[in-house]
Image (cartoon, rainbow over all chains, first blue to last red; front, side, top):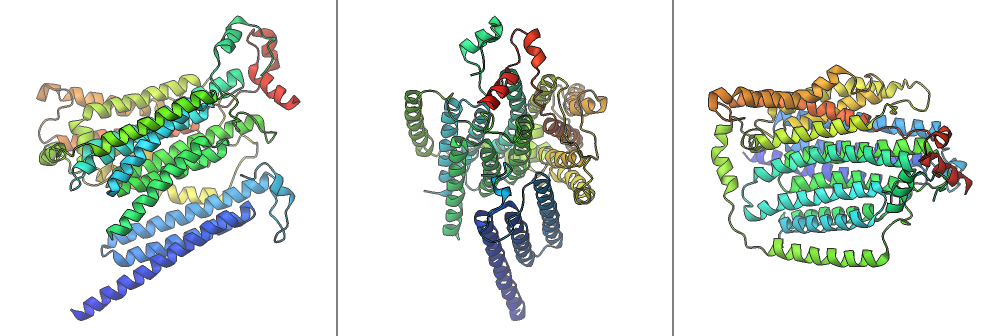
Length: 121
Length: 115
Length: 346
């Protein structure tokens, strides 16, 4: 019984750590979205950080949930979000390039692309 | 103040802000957006009201009503946007025609240039 | 824990009101659309917090997803017409047509009074105990399903759901009648799009979505789920297939599409009539038949809702080219062309 209890405790703590870490990645992704200079950097920040953050949160929830089908559903949700995010990122970057929005080349430097109409806000 | 009251208050505020926007924004797309938001505000009130009365059991009746409401809102939005696009195609502007412009359209003074 | 929960609720509520205010007051259409989608997703969080997972599912898929896509699609139509030129009143509302300030002031005051009045009336109202939820819970076994929301939707308040489907079909008919063959969809800008990544996602996501939709329809009788959520999921798959160019966009001219749009309502009405000789009442299911009938109606509704949603998404009509010939033929002229030319000239 005590062994069981320790196991539960370890699982709880590990799950908590994973979820908090996941939230930190979300925070980083959001800061990137707000602070990065152009569309490509922002995409980079959002898709990578948020996907990893979601993965960590899913891992944390899987540890908390004792039911196997529910665990599989959680993982499936992550895989779907992962592939959707990757595809959307690719499509956005591709169509922006096709529309002539240039990525900035050097830190702090601006490029012709920034003035283009595709630049939102 | 309990959390459900917060949602109720949010519902009231959103419904009425949206009402204000629907009446003061002339642009048709904002009118559509505002009416959509009014709907969601009403949904918030509908769902929060019964949870205040019986917090221990979720009332399925308002839930069913809101569920149908969301679907109807989507259909109505699509229709409204279609009509707005037709207005734009006809007048070139995303606004409802004023009375005198309507006269211009039917009266047929084509020389009246764009404004 | 409850303090943390209260903090979360307060954050969600503040976010909702903030997003709503900003999106209603901003002058940029694109910004408003992006905020609208964010608002829808935040709202689905609110539904979860209010104990309504059924609605959270529908809100995320329909309120944020499909409606947002509709607005984006319309926006796309407008930019196609205008190009990347100077600011157009179509996309940037400068407020020049808005009513005068005194009207706004009076209305604002009235709205403020209404907020206070409604807040006082609704929040200060005495809390009479509600009997309806208990009544529904007590009589749920008669409906043939265990999910109370499905029970209300398809048994207790079957009429409402039937009429709601009728509204959907009517809106569909309205959109179809607005569309005068001027629509274009998909690769408007020329190049045939063979994006391998999009196709890979389609191949992977569509089967998963279809299976999930069937599961949601099936599970709707016992757990959160049902025709509306499943239909919107299926619509998502349909939109993906259309955007990826795998399926041709559905059109009013195609008989299967029309049949599927009308199928849900027709099946619902037929089921309602079929039980008449047995129970003597429209839509009053005979004992023991409630569950299979509800499941059958839900399956039809799922397909209907999915097709209507895809069609509504696809069928945003293109704004037609301004036609100079119109001005000599039609006395009302070609206002769009005039407006656009006038704008370019200035």
